[in-house]
Every structure is written in structure tokens, then in C-alpha cells.
Amino acid sequence: MSWPQNPDWATILPKIPVATAPPNADTSDLDGDTDTDSFLLAAWVSLFETWPGSVPVDLMTLTFNIQSGASGTTPINIIATSNPVGFTFDGQNHTINLDGTSTVNIPTVSSATQHVYVSSSTKSADGTKAIVTISYNSDDTTVTGIGLSIHYDNTKIQLADVTNIFETELFVRPEASSGAARDGLITQASGRVFRTMNPEELVLFDYVAEGYIEDNPNETTRDSYVGNYQFGVTGP
Image (cartoon, rainbow, N blue to C red; front, top):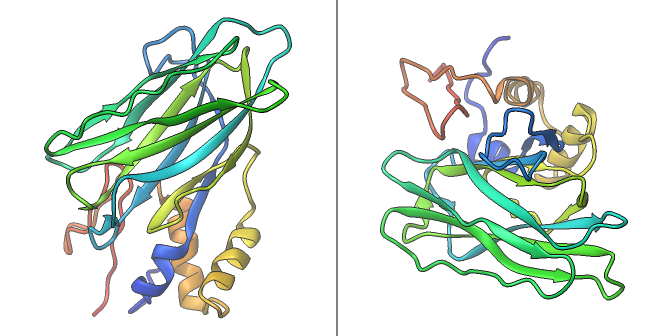
């Protein structure tokens, strides 16, 4: 796939959700907790080191259906898949109380640390759903982004919806379903910038959508942002 010349980075890339990420089976026990069996991916990449712009910020709200017969407590674990060099990741694990009220722990901000945590944990009025908000805080509002995996126990809570997504910069959109098709994402991206994407931008879109998980930084321009989410561009 060829690179587009002089792509409109400032307008196009920050507004395109590059891919959707359906829940995954945690067969490798990535969070080191045998009480979780599934996880959701999400990532934000700032091309100009301006993420998230202000803090604290809510990243997303997750709505879970409480499985029939489930009781007691169940964990929500947050781990980093990528974060900027020089920053420590602090993912605050959370416990949902299926039989009562859940308590949240809002971390105190530490220097050069990216804090991700559950800032709100409630149940629906009929008690059938658990609703948690994932939030972010740091002492630096202009970093290169962050990548997350959020782990939970699908035998007790089943992910039903992801809403209130923090839609800024280039991001991997968390999804409760199987994810949107390429044409759907292109339509969405075109609507956001109030015009149809031109052929060069479609090439760029396909590169990002198909290759966002490749660790292949550009050795000439040294374009390399967060973890394995690598981008480069040739031409003037």
C-alpha cells in the first residue's frame, strides 16, 4: 500500500476511530486474575502530543447485564497495553458489589503517572445492570495517549453497551458488539469532517485501519507514538 502525499493529518487522523475492538476471551490471563475471563481494548494516540487536553476526563461508560443467579462481588481490572515513555501506569482495580452498593477509589495524582480508574459504579433502578465509568487523570495534559485493556468476569456480568466514549485524537473504539465495518467507519469519519474523504485520505484510512497494530515505526522521520501503535509518513 502506497503512502499518500501531504495528507491532511490535522483534520483527518484525529477524527477517525481507526478500528473497533470487541470483547476478547482472556485465555492468557493477562491481568493475572483467574476471576476474570474477558477483556475490552481501547486506545488513544495523539499525533501531536496533546492528549487528553484537560484532566480529569471520563474515557467511557460500560453497561453490563448482571447474569441470572450472579451474586457477591466481581472484579473490574484495568491494565495498560501501552503508555508514553517516562510515565508510570496506575490502573486502579475495582470491585462491583452485585448485592449492594459498590465503593469507588479515586486515586491521588502522582507525578509522571497516568491514572485510570473507575470513578462511578452504580446499578440500574431494577438491579439488572451494573454501570461503571472509566476515568483518567495525570499531572500532564499533553502526552502521546494511552492503551488499555479492561478485564471482567463474563460469567457474572456481560458487556451490553459502551457509551460516552472520549472521542478525541486517533483512537481504537471500544465496542460491545462485533464492531463496525470499514464503510461504516468511512461514512462516520466523512461526516465528522463535513466532507467526503478524498482518495489519498482513503488510502491513509486503510493503512491505519488495517495496520494500527503493527510495530513498524518510520526510521526516517522517527514517527513513533504510543506502544505498538506506530505511524509514519513519506513525502514533503
